[in-house]
Length: 152
Image (cartoon, rainbow, N blue to C red; front, side):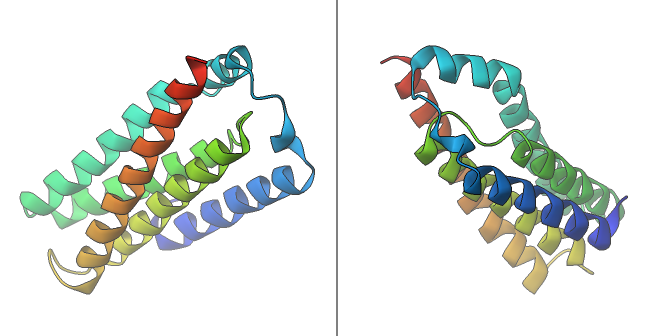
């Protein structure tokens, strides 16, 4: 499942999983440091963050090297990886879950804009860049929150 339709389907599935988990109260688990560490380990959080950042680097390199086809492949990878990351939510901390959901959803939206690009510049590329920068900033803030909570 690749391309725009695949990214849209993954995004819809991932967002419905998060909405269902939040609605059922799963995000209301205790905010203990050990609970957060356990969740982060089970969710492979560090690896996931590295993978998502790597996907964005690959996309940016593709645009820089003027390789649109390879860039579209990387866009699909980012959408798939971000949708998979959403599937690891909720985290034991509600605010962290909200931040990560925003970051992952932002990366899915960035991947969609990237997949829509028909040239190496233009509206879709600008939308991708804007969305990916904002999503990565949110991901960095969420990572900092996780580490701060783990040190409590």
